Amino acid sequence: MKGQIRYEHVTIRYPGSDRNAVDDVSFECGSGELVVLLGPSGCGKSTLLRTVNRLVPLDAGHVFVDGADVTQRDAVELRRSIGYVIQAIGLFPHMTVAQNVAVVPSLLGWDRQAIARRVDDLLRLVGLDPDSYRTRRPSQLSGGEAQRIGVARAIAARPHALLMDEPFGAVDAVVRSALQRELVRIVAELETTTLFVTHDVDEAFRLADRIVVMRAGRLEQVAQPHELFEHPATAYVAEIVHAGDDVFRRYFLHGRELLRGGSQ
Amino acid sequence: MNYILNHPLRVAALAAGHLELVAVALVVALAIALPLGLFAARHPRIAPWLLGTLGAIYTIPSLALLAVLVRWVGLGFAPIFVALVVYAQFMLTRNIVAGIAGVDQAQVDAARGLGMSPTQVLLRVEFPQALPVMIGGVRIAAIAMIAIATLGGYVGGVGLGVLIFNGLTLHQPQMIVAGSLAASALSIVVDMLLRLGERRAATP
Image 1 (cartoon, helix red, strand yellow):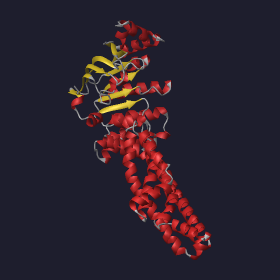
Image 2 (cartoon, helix red, strand yellow):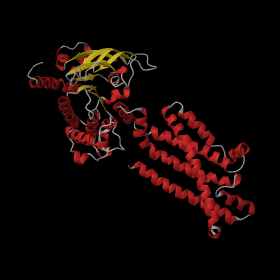
Image 3 (cartoon, helix red, strand yellow):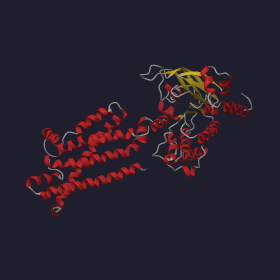
């Protein structure tokens, strides 16, 4: 049950809109699983993500985290128990890197020494030397470094679930693939359930245990990457998995099967 | 200049009274503008109306406003004090709204998503970053208030305006110059101090 996220018939309509931003969506994200929400911009994937930490209210349906209906929990306390990373990063420029990383532990009232130790561990975990980064300001970081800090901040209080909204969308391709590799490593190490939003098909294929394909607020298909390839449920799914250079995706999937001992 | 050299204590006493009037009015004005500004920053639909109203009040000529206030609250400290508080509202509130609106929305989204309560978002994220702009508002308001406060000499016998208006009635240009120079010097010093505060708030 740890970190498990479950959507049941979730529907959201923004005020003044004539269609549902999210329309009767149900699926489950198992404990420790990395699930990617994939779809074009405006398909409702970010909206769906932001229901988990109650940044977006539901109009119908339920969202469960750790088996508990999120609307039954205090929003602030719920959010502190869930990691949250966004594309724009949103580091606080008036705080040091260490203070940024320590935001949630200090909100939770951890003692000073525990926080300092945790900050150093996290900086090492995201591949940055604590001694040279601890006291820096966000303005002194590159885009890639800043998002590493964004990830460290999100997982600082050891959340069971992690929400990532196009976290690597604003960094260049080389940095992005490094960050993707490290995310896979970190998430596997921490066994954190991760919901990851992207419109980048290759990114989805690299990261996902399972992919949720969305279009215009509806689910098109929920499946493992190779299943999307071999048995696309709709014409739209077939179109996006083959869009662009799908040779890479075939090659990549093949490599992943080998790595996992072909157990899929 | 001569007058200042010949009557340094009198000028200093009036300058102190002037500064006290502005300082007390500024504190009271801030106590009103802060909740007003925070409310407007949280209600973007109401903000233009509120700022528009305050801006309209700001355009009322100060002598006209004082004439009305004297009828209501009599002569003395009260009318100029009320006038200063009223005039400061526009500058203070506008900069509080602008300061908070200028905070990157991504930071607010991240702060909420990480589990800060609305008060924590305000105090830990929005307020520290809006502070330089807010102090800028205080600076502009303080300078305008020092200028407007000279009218206190006319309606209440307080502040450096006393020198200016007495000089006018007694045909003593030296007194007028002394009052004006002292008021200008106050403005310059207050401006410099608050600029320093602004800069310090901007670089933590």
